[in-house]
Amino acid sequence: MSSSEAGPPAEPAGALPAVAPQLRALRRRACLTLEAAARDAGLSPAHLSRLETGQRQPSLPMLLSLARIYGTTVSELLGESAAGRDAVVRAAGMEPTTAGGWTYRQAGAAGRGMQALRVQVPYGSQGDIVRVHPGEEWLYVLKGRLRLRLGDTPHRLAPGDSAHFDSLTPHRIAASDSDGVELLFVHTLLQSPTAALCLGPIHGEAT
Image 1 (spheres, rainbow, N blue to C red):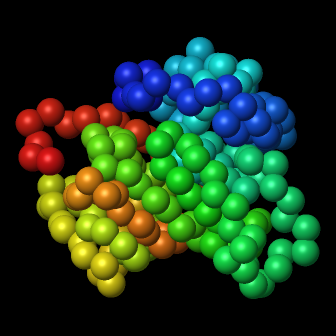
Image 2: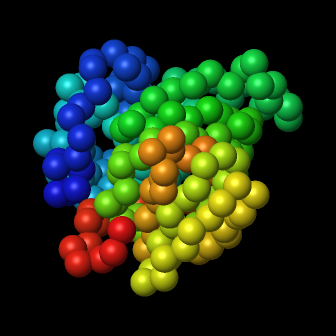
């Protein structure tokens, strides 16, 4: 996938130490070959292989895409246990994880049919990536201002604004201001052969 290959430099090895072994194990559990999983995720087999061996670190959108393909959650991809499935998530227990420049915290229990994340999106990070995948998304702006593009329609969201949309609508997410934007983000977890497609920059579009 050209957008992933041409993205920001890989994060230092070890930034997400649990990801590499979990990616391979969960792919095999889903009975998918490297080639099939890469095709469904819109990645090249070589790129997915580098993710599985720890030579590159996945971005958060990649983790979301692979979680859908493997029928699991980002929490499980990161090696976090879903034991107990506590209904309450305490602020002190929301450990930050950085992926592809974004910082996110699990805001809901692992292993559920929906996933809730608190996401910090820095200015200039992944704003040119177009995402298309099955399911629904809901987001709420906690701090900063968000540029959200749904299909051909641009939107500017301020703190307190929210959006709820079908994830098959091509969408882009970016921070409007240099301080970045903080979001509460909820999405459904659907396993689908179409999975998440990161189509990369659409040239000529206003940003």
